[in-house]
Image (cartoon, rainbow, N blue to C red; front, side):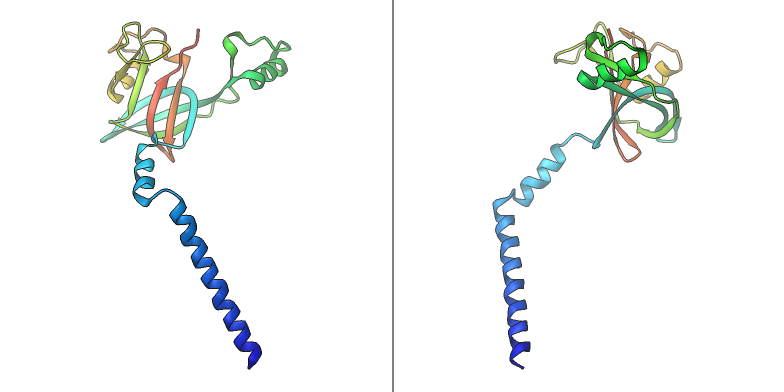
Length: 177
C-alpha cells in the first residue's frame, strides 16, 4: 500500500512539474497575439524555387502553371558544380544554374498572386533591376509570346516562386546579366 501511495505521489509531483514548466516557458515566449501577428506578417509560402514557366493557362478562377525547376547556385556551391560539369570553376556574376532535368511540375496560381517582371520602366522601388507588378493574366500572355508589358529581358531568365504546398503565392523574374 505504501509503495502504491509513493508511486501515485511521485506521478502527481511529476505532472505538476511538467505543467508548471510549460506555463513558465509560455510566459517567457511571445504572447499568442504577437505570435499570430508574426505568422500573418510572414511572406506566403515556406518554399522558394527557381525555374522556368513553360505554360500558364486559366482554369476557372485561377491559373495552372507548368514549371520546370532548376538550381540557381552561388558561391562555393556554384563553383564546384560548374567545375564538375565543365572542368572550369569560373562562375561569372557568382551564379550558376543547373538544369538537372526537365520534368514539368503543375502548380495552382491564384489570379491574385504577387507577380513582378523585369522592365526598363519599372516602378517598384528597391535595389536591383527595375520591376513592374503584373497580373497572372498578363503573365499568361507573356508566356504565350504576347507583349502586354515590355520586358527588359525574356522570361527565359527564370523566375523565383514562393509556394505553399501547390499554391503559388508569388512569382518574381530573375535578372541574369
